[in-house]
Image (cartoon, rainbow over all chains, first blue to last red; front, side):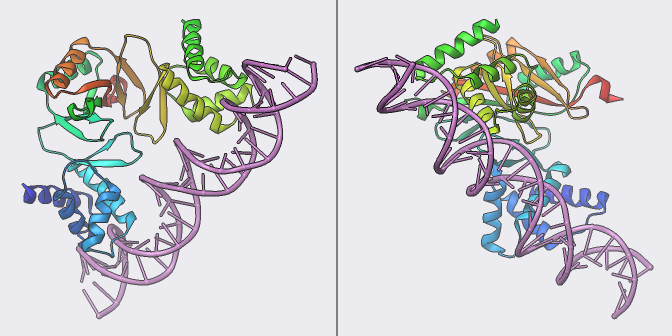
Length: 143
Length: 143
DNA sequence: CATGCTTTTGACATTCATTTTCAGTTATTT
DNA sequence: AAATAACTGAAAATGAATGTCAAAAGCATG
């Protein structure tokens, strides 16, 4: 699974004439080891812990590449930071975002996915990706 | 409809002890005259055309108020600017965003809304609002 | 309608995430 | 190993959004 993702990135890099570098390997490793929804800053700090040399800009640049390669997906919640989540082939999940404690619950719903396809088809629209976020209070924050 | 919105804002202002100012009236008028999804910058420019005195910060502050008052809703697409859309009571629409020409098609789907409620209920989650955006290519950009 | 109190405003400075720049470094090709 | 081109890190630049603060405007009161 991790190896598979590395292969996806290597193939992408090859197809684009990108070079294989130490930094990209490290960033990919650490990104793959994270939980969902890492902000760039979080990832940068994690990387710096083991690899002090790696700069801010490189992390930004590399995450963009992961997202082009289809390994990661940018998500914008409401805290002013871009976050990246892991893309799992053939799976798409959406988010319940708690505005009380900032926790995120993921869910999947095939019926919603299909309805979206219907709607897109009705408008002659070709879906590339989509994003559904439900904001509110989680069970714990409701009291 | 426009009068109704002004009343909503006036009531909100009254309940919060806010004052009635020329600037807020102007910004509300112009906001109500816009199409969906105005960015703060777009609105600011439009306002400046007829009212050169009004400053950037005031537009930001006032849009925040509209959104607290329930007249407007913040949306984050992918161009790094916060946009505001009009809130129509009892109605919620979602967006098909064309990454080719940046056009936005709105749609409504009650079944999706209901499925979201089911999902939230299943997680003990209290929905405040939600957002569904489908990215891809519109009919015109597909060729 | 003058007074005093409070909110609001606009200009400017500031912050913070992200991008750009560019000189030096590194990977790849020959 | 030399040539070429991509990559990197540090620092500067950008751009959206927020904070600051003195001056201006609203609003209640005498």
